[in-house]
Amino acid sequence: MRIVAMIVLLAFVAQVLAKAEIEKPRESGNASCPSLIQKDTRVHRYSPDQTKTENAFVAAGGSKSKITDNWSYITSAVTNANIPDDIHFAFFVANMMQETAKLTTKKEYSSHYHAGKYDWNSDNTIQYYGRGYLQTTWKKNYEAAKDTCNKDDDGNSVDIVTDPVKIESSENLAWCTAAYYWKVNVQNDRCNCDLGMTIDAINGDLECKAHKDKSTHNEEAKNRYCYFKKFYESYSGSSVQSWNVGKACGTLFGQSC
Image 1 (cartoon, rainbow, N blue to C red):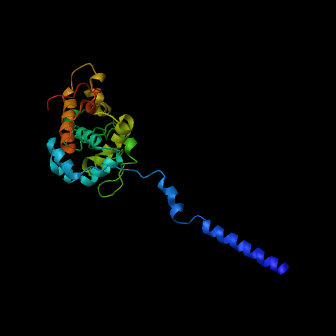
Image 2 (image 1 turned 45 degrees about the vertical axis):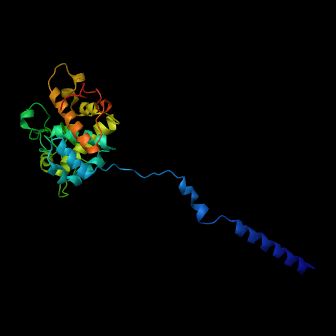
Image 3 (image 1 turned 90 degrees about the horizontal axis):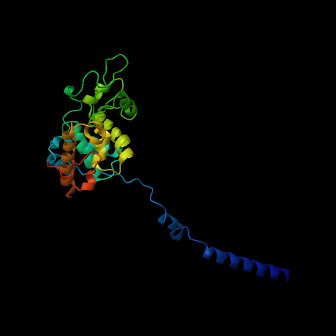
């Protein structure tokens, strides 16, 4: 009898185990469902279109070659500057066009500054006038960017504080310093923004009426507006609206270009 009872018990245990195996959640299928509701943590980067950028730059008065020849630097700068969309890209380009005569110089014209306008290094051999495509000025701004912008076009290490002249001959450094300044002082500080806010961040003391009681340098702010309007409307196929321009730098919207 004991043997029979043991056989019956073992048969019962086997049935229970078999049933548990059948009802066990499958390793595939349902087990992968949680991934369907997980948040997408990927970073979505804005990437400008080269052909549209070339055409828009020409529409704003620039030379196509300035875009074509430097496209890899431009795309890196857009990413590093945290530019999120077409309109902020147009802000970026318009301000650079004004700062550098449509990307034709990486150095501030000597007629725009004098020995006492900007600071110098300790032995008075290097002056920190405007360099790069957003014309980085003042030693503190060179110091802020030095760890980020530290390679020339050939990958050689550069200290832009002790050797800022390298920026004048390096596309990589010229675009890097522009992207750094834009990210820190414009994109992260002012934006989501309008054109007037970007002008105020870059040269508000001279160009924006809120900071001065005279009418000088108003033409420069207008130039930025016209570069922006022509570039953006060509690039996007949409018309600039008043809220894209704002009033942080006076009434620019609607001015004749």
